[in-house]
Image (cartoon, rainbow, N blue to C red; front, top):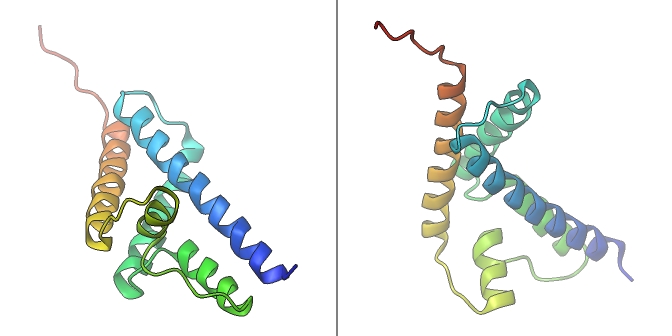
Length: 127
């Protein structure tokens, strides 16, 4: 078994976990729960890194890493992004990359807005 294919599959699995983490993090943050301090220092830099790679490379850094391992293993790199590729391959649902990028932008912007709202002190009501 080719070690690069194994690394590509592990990277794809971790990428799926990261997607689930961000989606669940968004749900929790928008429900009004107070965010633990570690979340600010882990999620915010990862969103900034993700935006940078999407703007400069056109893809998520984890997808680029998976494609790199697939090429080293002699396989064809994924066409498009992670979500659009695996939704088509696993479920037969074709999602355009542009739609995925818009959704990712909305989700990451919502997470940033939720962070900002958690750190703004609440005003005392004048009654």
